[in-house]
Length: 334
Image 1 (cartoon, rainbow, N blue to C red):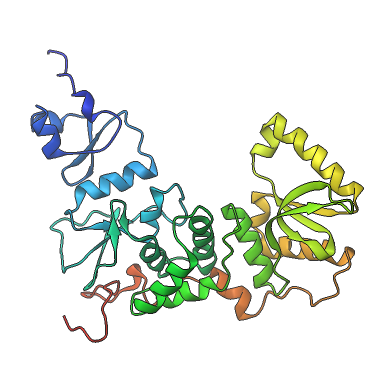
Image 2: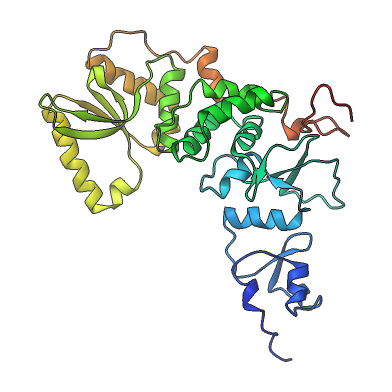
């Protein structure tokens, strides 16, 4: 048996459509070889191709018609943020399209009025609105902080979209998230920590604030700062443990803070897995720094709503024979 025919270089390292492969000289019979892995109907990758989240989104685009646009959190993957389930990939189409085959890794939302789109998919405001219909409030705030901090959208644009397109699934949920956002937050864990504190009824801290000593000398920039309590809260990512230079900078910084009577709390990813315990620990440190306000509460709607997923728009809870994700304006009949 002869050696397998060489695969065109253009097909390496990414997903591709059957039509492209055929145009490059690959035969239909070759595509049945184990070197080619089916991703979606008529969409393949080579067996040694690593499928990153961005590659999966591109595969979804290839599998769908040209008027299907990446939406919900799927739209944000190309920007560099991944939050919430990657699958199913979410796309939105402005018509009543039914696929002959329904890939389990794809979900197609149908709408009577397509929101603004660009090369990446629906607008960022529309994507956040869609995400708000299927994700926890906490996650929506984190995503909104992330895109706002990096200048992908403005608060005004988000607020205006929830008003002009108030009928879309997720608009009400995004409007509630806007009450908690902070564009100054630079990372997802920072946003989560702030939301936990506020959700438990504690005062809202400053995000990424510079602190100085009594003589005006710079001490540190804190992820979250209670300036009036001289308390700084830091999320310690893995780079703080494995980057020697960063580790030494941290030692110098925390030494300066202690010298000026600042207290600091170092949070880790494992602490975020026990949110109430983490909030209690921060509150105890706040009290030691002079806080006399109400203690955190974990029983009211303000706290519980952070972790709830909307049910009325969930695509996995729709009635049989009807797609409840279809965004429909009240005055339009279909």
